[in-house]
Image (cartoon, rainbow, N blue to C red; front, side):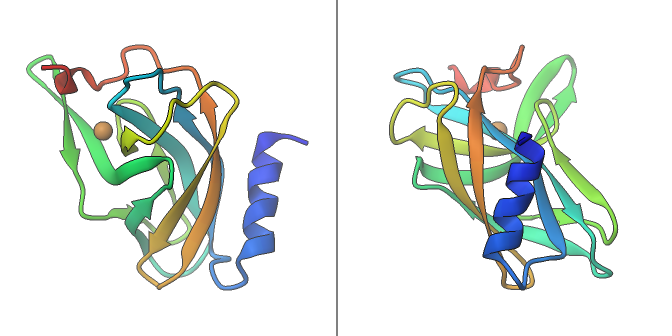
Length: 149
Ligand SMILES: [Cu+2]
């Protein structure tokens, strides 16, 4: 069974009310011991007629989770915290390295490739999506350089 199908099945089985928004292919970058932040990525598909937004995210695998957007200016990548993330009606929000993404701050333990990371994604309609994200190798570049002072 593909990861995509598996993620979709989890959603269908858990949520009768949040059926308008699907989480596709969620993953988290590996966190070696001592890592302070790691990125979380996925595609959110809104099959409903109303615009939705992500209002908060959390995970037991991190002290805190934030929503970020990586912005490039003057050759530098910079991450800007976002209050919410929009998922337009009949549209998609792609969370990917170098763009919008989730940030796990202060991993509570190292995350090895292949581990599963549970996370909760809350939407503005009051529903919460339960997601299990697979740990994969860190993306090239990463876009998180500014955290290393
Ligand atoms: Cu970030």
